[in-house]
Figure (spheres, rainbow, N blue to C red):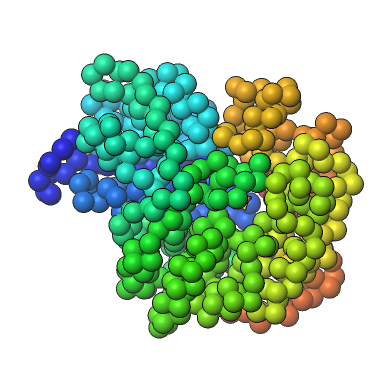
Length: 478
Ligand code: SF4
């Protein structure tokens, strides 16, 4: 697979497999889509920057295009790729792997990425002999090294050696290193069917300037990844490309915005120069937000910050190593309001150690902080997390069980004294208690918005409530 002339490059297909529902499988965080949002898989986007020079790239998103399994197979075989880089997710991993098996051929290389593979990747390769390699960092160059036989350069990947079939699992942690992906091939991924509830312009895509998270919240898979960041020169080139493609709306997908503070402030200053300006949303922790960062974010076009609150109980926040208190959470939301930045609070219900009281405290905090939207998840023991290791050790979950969905379509674990039905009832109460307050509804109704935003907000609100109440299941395919 080395040194092919440009016109004779091997074909590499990025494949998001079909599913019965709208599922998200990228960034090691699979789930059903709560408010029908769907964006390009970031694992593919980042690899496209690395692989474009040596491979002819194709992309099939069977979830986005609502393809049935047979229609997807037809499209794949029409392309007839030499290599398939596929996603699989804990939310539907068995059907994902059954489907991927149908596409395997002796001379086709199959490389996977997904949350399930982070736990014991060697075991997955032993169990599924049609997979050649599993990537465990979608921002490094391992896939290219593997395809081109430079095995000694691999950093975080499990792979089968061609010829002997011997399996290796390499995990050389390199914290605080820069990531270099070049300029991702955004043109391949921009598509009108991708939807994002907070988007204010129809032409939108995702953007990423780091990988993982340096904080150590014990339930979160991001804390198990080596934190890596991208230099501003590369990020700016990508912004220039996006601007030239007419993209105005971004979901800046960093898991905690502003970690590399000086670099971030500099990039925001550059970003504010674009005319017309970008308009964007990002994730952040309450204790990272301050006046300086928020005013720079606002100047650069940020309109929405999604803040991981998690719990209204200081005891639970401490137990899971969050590193901030409910008082700091309130202050962060107040600050965002001062800067006229819309907020979304995200909350986790049902972590081990929780009681009915702590869940009620979370629900109360969601109403008190004045966030514009609230998103309530159920706890999931994701592969690679301390939460999962503890839950297996204490016998709360079976180590062989990977099926889970933080959106709550399937409850993988509950605290000791709470059964799944009670947990779901508390979640429903939290959703209704937040969204059906008359004052909240009136405020949302009279907020000035464009027609595009209004349509998005109505759609998103209805989906969030219906999903939160467990009343909606979207079937795909035909
Ligand atoms: S700050 Fe957020 S992204 Fe980072 S480890 Fe904690 S929960 Fe995960």
